[in-house]
Image (cartoon, rainbow, N blue to C red; front, side, top):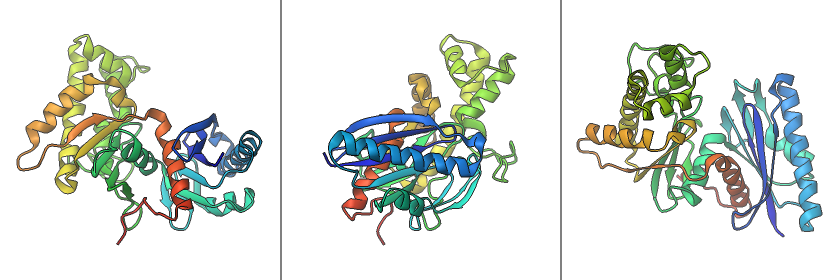
Length: 314
C-alpha cells in the first residue's frame, strides 16, 4: 500500500504516523522528544524514529514509504529544508531535510512549521475544509496562526506569516519574550490564563482548564480572569480579520477545549467589535492533536504530486 511518513515534533513529544493517499492514518506512534538530552540527541531521535517507521511500513505494507513530511516548531526555512531556530529544542540551522533524506535512503522530505502544518490539515480536511479563506489560531503555551488561502497556507516572505500572538493588544502591558510589551499571547494563551488564575485563586498548580471549570460554576474571580482573556483575544482577532478577511476563523489548542465556555463569549466579543468588517464563522478546530501529523502527511503527498500548497504562488 502506498503511504508516506508523517512526523510532528513538539517540545516534549513526537507524534508520528504512516498516512495513506486518502489521508487515512494507517499507523500511529508517539515518543518523547528528549530535549533534556540536548539538541543533537533530539535530531538523532527524529532520524531514528523516521527510520523505524520506514522499516515498519516496508514490513507491514510490502514496500517503503514514498516520501516524508515533518512539522517542527520555531523558525523554519521550508524552501531550504532547514530548522533555523527553536528555543524549546535548543537548535539552530539544522539541515533536517538533508539529514532525513540521507538516513532514509534518498526519500524526498518536506519540512514545515508546526502551526502552519496543522493549519494546512484543518483547512483541507478539518474545520476549514469548505472555506476558501481561513485563519487557524491555536491557543496553547503561546499563540500562533496559519493563514489559509485556497488550500494553501501562507508562510510569508520570511516565514513569519500568521504570528498573531505578537499583535500588541495592551500597549505598555506585560513584557513579552519577543521584546514587545502587551502582546496577545501574554493575555489570552492557555499559559497566560493559567498564570492569571493561579494568582487569583492562590493555587500555584491551577491551570486554564481549572479556570474554565470555575467559570462554569460561576466563580466571580474566574469569570473576571476569563473575561479579561476573552477581551484581549477578541481585540487581537478583530485586528487579524480586518487585515485578512477570512471566511472561517478556526480556534484550537488547549484553551479551545473549554468549548462553549470560550466560544460563546468570544463570538459575542468579536461581534461587538466589528463595524464594517464581515463577521467570519468562529469554529473549534476539528482534528485535535492529530492535525500536525495529518498536515505533515499532506506536505509529503504534495511533494510527490509536485504541488506546493504551503505558500501562495506568486
